[in-house]
Figure (cartoon, rainbow, N blue to C red):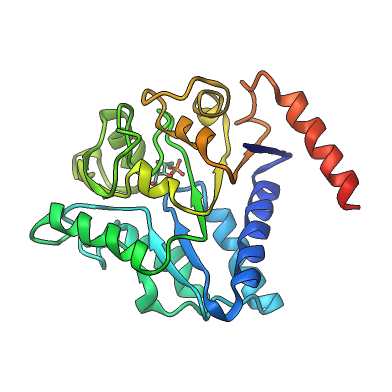
Length: 261
Ligand code: F6R
């Protein structure tokens, strides 16, 4: 794992945006397949990508995108749906074709069949080139809550009480937060060719430590990323607070910066 400790959330977002930009350029007209997350963690990254689109002409015209997850029972246009969130905070402000921003259908009459269809559609598009992830305070990625199988694919999951409470800030009350979701599985996420996870704030410090330095265990689903060959974890100082080897990660980073200059 590559661990980058940024001085603040803005710098962290710029680092993640750089990684997206590299992949967009590398894939060019072949079209990058972007894996997008919702929630607060990627918002500054999306803002940075929008400003690079507006000010530097960074183009998403050949790209397509797959969302990680969606609430069951919410339509794509519902104010709190993840499909709507991603359009409002990111894709609606760049030149990616709207019809190529795909998410599980939260209103599908048969959610299990929808999960299988959605999972297959990612493979049919050639797989995800770069996946951005946030991490839950309990170590979830996507909505793979603790004890999710490392072999899991896109499926229906029930949220933990903590995740429902954490997500209630986006709704008028926690009673309105759907408790069932469609989420890419851990195995599905692991198939992305590159993964960049962003975590900021001290509320994430423990989950970041468990993910990076703890045992690979279903108790911390994000720890599966230790098994992936191309993962970058970008954290700010607060989220890095509990890392035992923080000085080593900073040392590696300073050596890379020297090689690059
Ligand atoms: C969102 C997602 C979740 C969030 C996680 C962190 O699509 O899959 O795993 O990334 O719950 O949420 P925030 O960023 O709001 O702290």
